[in-house]
Length: 295
Image (cartoon, rainbow, N blue to C red):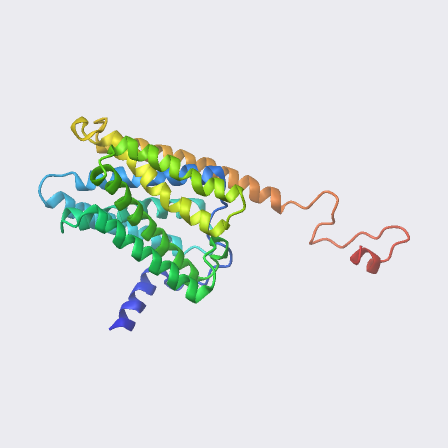
């Protein structure tokens, strides 16, 4: 039974596509973090819109729709052989939406307090990290160049979204900070790994620390924008918020894709002072080929 389930999941997310030939994550730049925070805010607002109907019919439809989009997005991402800007960020947006609904469901439908859901998803994330380390001996995103590492990576991403959602709800409700104050709190917290990285702290640890915090940071401000004023929000509504955030994210991804294409073209061009790799080395007067090779 377990083997059949594993084979079924592999068929969904891998198909017959070959193993990746290149690292399938973007370069970590300032724009990467801006898009990441925007994606977390979008996922929160989009999930709130799915959950916002009266009764159980609309939330049930929303859950099925988010699951379908989540599956489609990850399938598209896994079928690429190298990093593609659109596929990667579409997957991030859908993982953000599905991860939010998965985290919220424990509280909304089972009545589990946010403090417990936060602890639960922290354990889940720790287990995913542990399994990744045991199998690969690295947690660096710069080594996502095999199918197994890619599965570990996206499992980690999903766990970080669920943990961040639960954490943001916990600080806003149980700790009674409210959404705006929670956003400010996480804005301060995310500065910790940034400063630590500048001071020479482990880059893998600081990356994942910041990655987790982007979720409650973006989600807190999204909730502040779409929740009613009686709940401490600005009462803009869920659908206007997620549409604005979706358009903003689309624009940022287009800019990111343009910059990445320019960067790849620039790196592909031969250095003006070096021979082209596909052309024969020029013979300089009085210098043999062997001397050029060892220069």
